[in-house]
Length: 274
Image (cartoon, rainbow, N blue to C red; front, side, top):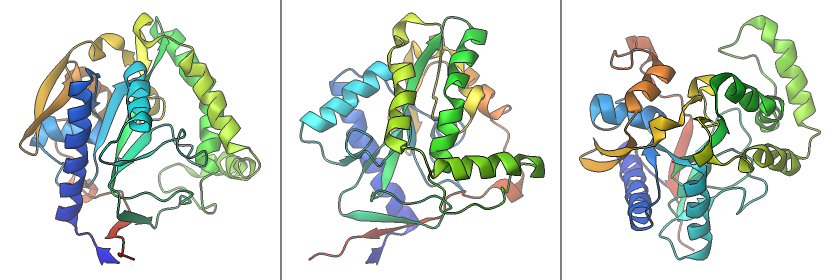
């Protein structure tokens, strides 16, 4: 298979983001650049120099409409979500370039094939006040950790957590091998789908990497602006300063040089023609 280099990889990701943006603007769907992509847009007007992926986020009602559009209409990309593959139990969806393949050397099992992609995170409604929102967020923490552990290839020592977490991680790993992943995923989804995003005061990307730092006032998602990312305008939440401050702290300050590295371990290829 033909290898896809770093610059070609980013070119494909931008093409996916362009196609996503066109659909969202046409259908009047709310979305925002998210996580490191939003940080990159604000601080670098493009990719963080050592990053190699794109994340976007959508309020739950708009996310569900987007998934429905992908399932019902002819779209210029593939969709990987629980709706298209019950083995896929991440709390986010991916849109990907057909005809490409990702091979990942990370600790996670590759239970589904997917090409070069961008991630789409639903922003879930939680509750009207922060303390209640934390309780709703934590309500699914056990099941979410089980779903994560169920996708580990093998048990290995954490590179980031202290030694005393290891017995708990091992317990999750063993329990994760025995659960019905699809039913566990559906149980998590059920909690949030019955909450009306537009009627609560606090929301979060429940499947995000920053956990409770993602719990923020819904007002941050009320207004949307255009920010430049790699020379083009894309949507971003008007409250991006508070969002980025919650997740990254002093986000305009560059991290130490030793931490300016990609955390991804994948390789991308074009599929061979048959």
